[in-house]
Image (cartoon, rainbow, N blue to C red):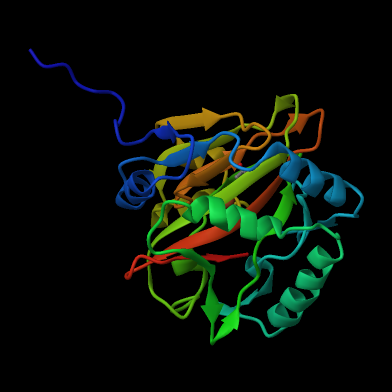
Amino acid sequence: MSSIARTDPFFRAVISPAFTREHITDLAAGRCAAIRVPDCLPADLCGQTLRALESRTFDTYGKKRVNPPVMRFGIGVSDHREQGQVADGYWNAVKADRQAWLDLGLPFDPFEECRAALGANWPGGVAVGRRGGREMGAGVAREPNQGFQVHFDDALREFSGDLLDAALVAQFAFNLYLSVPETGGETVLWRHLWHPADEKFRLLDSYGYDEAVVDDAESLEFKPEVGEAILINPRYFHAVRPSQGSRRIALGFAVGMTATGELLTWG
Ligand SMILES: O=C(O)CCC(=O)C(=O)O
Ligand SMILES: [Fe+2]
């Protein structure tokens, strides 16, 4: 007699000392849902970045769309979306954002360090993506102390046509955790991809959905650690649980894989 598997062997998080070619390919192909790399960046690099960020005032996302509020240092293209297009204001915001990160006075570029770690074993390389020849933002520091609602990220559905100058064959979300809370703050992924019928669970004017949208879908949950980087398939519904204690601060950006095997990032 054969037993019936109740879990999907491909819906799993792999833990690895580095981002390998095999794991990134598995994530693109659906053979895993997340890659976790503990101690991805040296502790002193994370510490310096955190201390610099702690001395700055964080902004909030649009309070209506992102509620409970999420703090952030930097900008994201999702705040500059107008009718499926990137609003002109994004480019000035990117320019100001680059200066704001330079003004932190760090002797290195934290996003460049993240890209280097991500691309260490990737033959196609990792670069910041371009749109109409212009370089996109490198990423953002986000602080969702009160959590992220259940949501998914998919540039294909958020923007009309290609967001970048290249067509993407897969999308990922990268996070590098600089500070984590003592209680809560887990990242949860559900084995559920958006379906039109899910729209009835959409929270009013929000990026998020009622948790009933993921119903009894298989889930995986992890509690990030300082210095850890994760790469997830953000087309799976996911959320961050509310937390207490230390601030939950992560460097984040989106990653796309092109048909020629380049990894392109944007924030
Ligand atoms: O902070 C996290 O762990 C995940 C945040 C998120 O929603 C994303 O990176 O797309
Ligand atoms: Fe997300």
